[in-house]
Amino acid sequence: MLKKPKTISKKPIRDILTSKVISVSPTTPFSEAVSLMQDKKISCLVVVENKRPVGIFTERDFVMALNDGLQSQDLEIKEVMSKPVLTAGEDMQVYEACDLLLENM
Image (cartoon, rainbow, N blue to C red; front, side, top):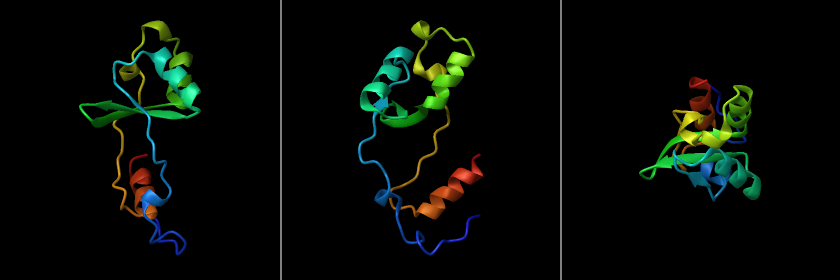
């Protein structure tokens, strides 16, 4: 458990989050997702199904897929995304979000 740092103890997550999240469906082709990340200059995409996050596709997932020799032209994001995805409410304090991440490493 992290101690409540004085500088962020009362700061909610919403104060540091990106306001616009880019998402794709689980059946999005791998190449399309990578192109979207390049076009938007972002490092990850939230994978959403029925309006719920089911995974996240990151630059690390991209590298791992290539390293594993997967054929990108036949690949869907659901095959290479990281899951489960952790979520936090916008009112959660930053130190609580850090604790959540540490507990799930």
